[in-house]
Image 1 (spheres, rainbow, N blue to C red):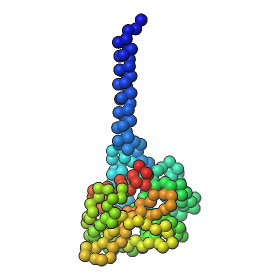
Image 2 (cartoon, rainbow, N blue to C red; image 1 turned 90 degrees about the horizontal axis):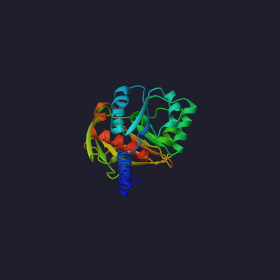
Image 3 (spheres, rainbow, N blue to C red; image 1 turned 90 degrees about the vertical axis):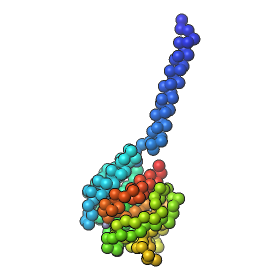
Length: 246
Ligand SMILES: [Zn+2]
């Protein structure tokens, strides 16, 4: 017959096991749990997509298992990957012409998934797909200052996307002249870009007020001067985290 101490030792070892399980769950929760699944679309002219998006940005997003990024530069592959991701990250400087892919992107937005629009994806690139700019970007860009130094100034310092980002920083990039489309859903400006001493500023980091999906636009990102700085990397991580509801 087993004595009391035998049963007590079983109880204690059970408590220890349970504590270890709870502890490991706690660690997983503290690190954000499951990595956010991101489909990053790049490719096209004027930029070194392999270096700054497939290279630098994927490395930033995958550090500490924060995100799991699938990078593609063939827009025909969007359709295949879209059903299995939480966030669509568009940086491509090339058109998406396939009707089924366009529909799938609009459905993804309508389903309330997360979208990040980076640099070239804010351009008026799709002349035969005006709905993209109107509904998803709520406007667009067809002009920028030539590459050079300018200031980024936060308008919203308490928004999750600008958390930990310097209130004002300088960098070398192309200052995009984003223009709002009044027929679109509208935007909430989180940061503006302007030349030092100039009164004219343009939205640089903003939320597109889509009724279903969280959409964040980051106008910065021409080359190393943005991708390699901490403020840009924080904006990138914050944007992916926020649009994915993490
Ligand atoms: Zn550029």
